[in-house]
Image (cartoon, rainbow, N blue to C red):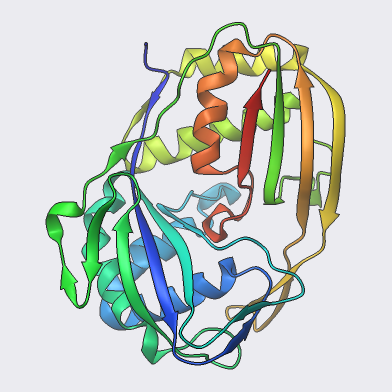
Length: 293
């Protein structure tokens, strides 16, 4: 199987235990990002700056992809309720060279009990961390296992004779054009967003991509059509400490079915399931599942 791109990551599967009953927001991506950032700022300011400030706008208005992503639990409307003694699980992905800072992230996670989750600062403490790609224990009962911290290439599998695909939008997908949320996703737009994300991560944090293939894919994607669309806008907000106010966090949920010659796109669609698509992926937004016909 030939390579289409090369990008690695380590996935920290984190389990927290609630020290009290907690009533949290329905979507915890922003909540978890905020508290982990607070803990990192106290334990390692340099690493905090590398992970969190890498995504600030660069010159020319270009937004630089961040080297990490938080995948929170599924949306739980109207709120996420965790009983005392129950566990809260989520993942942290560190891309490319960011994997070398896994120990600093683990140290910050050990300190989460000092900060609390949500507006009421509900207390949680670290239970365990697993490398979800190898199933090796990284942290348990105060013990850090350095040998379990290994990165794995993000796979882009190939399939033949693919004539259709169903894309399920699992967390709100946010693609903006002209400052507005795009409410219909053409296949070309989807592929352009996927390839741009792989390019951004691999160029900045270590990796490789077949740029000629990307150019060809964007052209070919125009021939793939939407045959069924069942999507809606999920209206969400998040509180921003930076702006000291609420920010719109709305995005698309549902399923889209595409039809056409999809075989060349399969490796990229596979990878997108791990990398997510669109804006605010660091919060876990734009998570997709793909099924091939």
